[in-house]
Image (tube, rainbow, N blue to C red; front, side, top):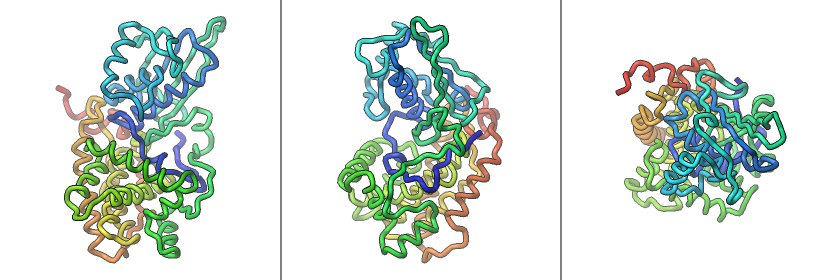
Length: 396
């Protein structure tokens, strides 16, 4: 399968990396909801019928990740960042009882929809470009053959249409000119050395290629506020740790935490992947741990070199971590793994601060090792629930 890496020359924004949406999974819930909405809103007319087929990891663990819910919400015009969580149960109940669904963003226009025939889990089948594949079909009056489009949820809530995902190496990103572009840890450190800027400042100034600093800060504040009541990911437990246990913690520090962590996320997206369907759990809990370690090291006063060291330590001790949710439920064992990831991140930050930033294993080396390990890992250990704990623990 094609690996959905980011083109090293392409730019990534913090808005691409941090996603606000309903859980439990950015790749299995947020991405499919976006794909469903993209499909229904792209149709040239109101269809007589629509169908969605889920493949790969989305089929094998989709029910445990609420992918079915996400598809229904997306087709009915809901967006991950704006849907009212309290209204979801009623929306789904109406769709299922009336066996019809609103045609995307079009008000008062409905399409017949029966989950038993129109939302299909193709267990054990994979589409060409990525494990998280979706195939949408729409039938129109007067036409025998449906309009068919494929989409792939490639990690972090990002979605690629089929033609783009199948293209060579599936490059992602934006063609904007950033003042301080970097695609490796070495380049990031060199920029910091030559400019005297922190990693967080480099990222903030690069965001200026898209918007004014106050707009970026407003977005970061919205992410922080969305994270505040949540504690599912190791990245979010560590942000809570900074807020509760670090003297002088404030909103500016929280922004610096996110901007620094984002820099590490960019490197993982460019040089490997943050999708468990491609990398196993090292690509999600491991990356989150690495990002959080970097962010915490930064707000604790670490130098750029110490921050890079913290990120490296965070990933080095998650290498090879498999994704094997029991019964397809992402919560088991992921809640515990995220807790342990948070502890590792905190320890990594403090460990890095004990040194001067010089270390033997570079962040670039550990990212490349993660990529190679993920590509070598058997698919049954990559979010398919076909191996590991998923088959060795009896469901109650």
